[in-house]
Amino acid sequence: MVDPKKQSVYYVVMVTTKFKSFADAKAKDPESIVAHIARSKKLHEQGTLVMSGAFLDNPGEALSTMGVLTSREAAEDYIKHDPFMLRGMIAKHTIREWANMFA
Image: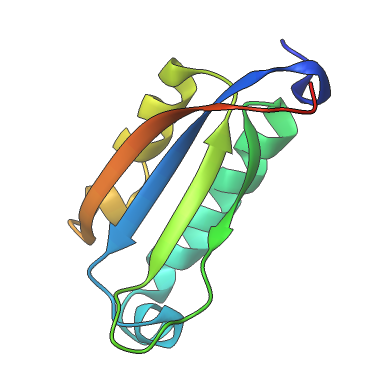
């Protein structure tokens, strides 16, 4: 396993959901939120998910999130098996290679 603090390249998964806000997601699909958070914590403990979270609600835009992972394979697995993806609640996603200037 790579030490995330010494890694110079990461993979960022940018997600746009079909929800209007975090409150909308909590109201319509609380089970997926619980499953998503539990899975994210497990991946973080394993060292493949460095950080993740939702962007603060921006009126007029769909709820967006991101995750920073240690490999392309981990990023692809992260989105492919995400509870929101499995339930069809992701409108679009991208995976981008990102350089850490502090490593």
